[in-house]
Image (cartoon, rainbow over all chains, first blue to last red; front, side, top):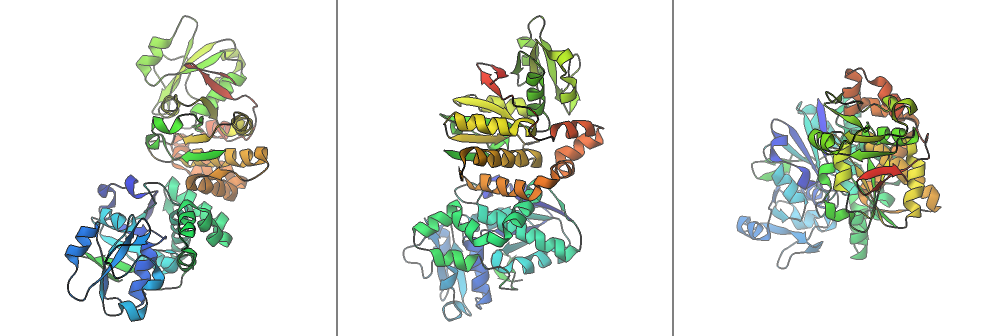
Length: 236
Length: 236
C-alpha cells in the first residue's frame, strides 16, 4: 500500500486519484463539520462547489450549510462551525454544504475508487477504513487560499501515524508524507497551539471563532467516516 | 523579518522574490556542489538552465559541470558530485554548471534583491547571511521531478533553526516554514537516514552514489555562502 500526500487543492490533478482511496482533509473546518454532522445523525452531506449549485441541489426539507470568507452565507440555515451541527439541528436531514476549500477538494477527488473525509475528530477511524479498503491512498490536504495549511498537514501526519499503527509496520510514503508524519510527531503534544499559530487559525481567532478551533482540534472523538456515495457523503 | 518557504521549483513564481532575499536549496546535489566548489577556490559558478546555454557561456579556461538524469553530461569536465570539485580541479577557475533542478531554481529567483545558495554544508553561514541582509526571506526548495524532496525540506528546516538562533527569537514564518522546522526537529538526529530513504536518496543509492549523499548531508562544514552577482555565484 502506497500513500501519497498532496499539499493543497491546487496541487491536485484528478488523474492522481484513479484507482485510489482519496482521504480529504480540511480540518478548519469543512471535514470537521462534515463528520460532526454525520455523527449527529444527518442522513448525508452533499458537497457543492458554489453557492448557486448548493441552492440548486436543495430539496424540500434539506438544510443549506456553508461559508464564504469564513462566515455563514446569507440565507443559509447553517454556517461552517461544527458546533452548529447538533443532533437537534441536523438529525434525519440532508445537508447541502459549500465551503471555500473543503468541498472543492472533495470534487477534485471524485474519480477515486473511494473518497473518505478525515479530520482530527475521526483520524483513527478514517486511517483504519483506508487500510481496510486495500487501495493505494492519496491524502489531499485542502489548504487555504491555494496554499498549504498547517492544520491539514498535521492531520495528514496524524492519519499516517494511525495507518502505521493499523498496518503494524512502516508505510510506503512519498517525501511529503514522510515530512508530514515527522512534523506531526514533533508537534503532537502541542496540536492546538500549533493550529492557532497557523494562518487559518489566526484568521479564525481574529473573527472570534476560537471555539471552532477547539472543537476541530480534538483527536479521535468520532468513529464515523463520512464516505462519498454518488454525490452524497454518508456514514461509511 | 518574514520568512516564506516554497516546496518545489514549479511552485515558485518570479513575483514572489521581489525585494526579498532568496535562499535556494537543492541539497542533492547542486547547492552542495556549488558551495564545495567555491570553498575549494573556484572563482565563480555560473548557473545555466540548459546544456546548450552552458556551452554558449563557456569561455576559454572555464570548466563545464553538471548532470542530466543524475549523470555527468557527455563532453563536460565535471559531473554534479561535490567530491569532484577539489581544489586541484577547480581553484582559480570559472565553472559553468547546469543541473536538472538547482540551476532552474536559481534562475527563478533572479529578481530577488539577493540570491544565496544553501545546503546542509553551509546552512548556519547562509542563515546568518540572510539575517544580516535585513530583507524578508523566501527559501526555495528546488525539489525533484516537480515534486517536494525531503532533503530540501530538511535543509530549509535547518536554515530556519539557524536563523532562529541568529535572531535570538522566533521567526515570523508561513505555515510551510513552520512545518519544515518541526519536521527538521523531529529528524535532526537521523538526517542521513531520512535523506537516504527519500526519493532522491533512493535514486542516487541505486546509481551507486552513496558517497554523494554522505558528502551532502554533513552539517555546517563551510562558512562560504555562494551569492549571485550578475549571472555568477561568488563567495558571498
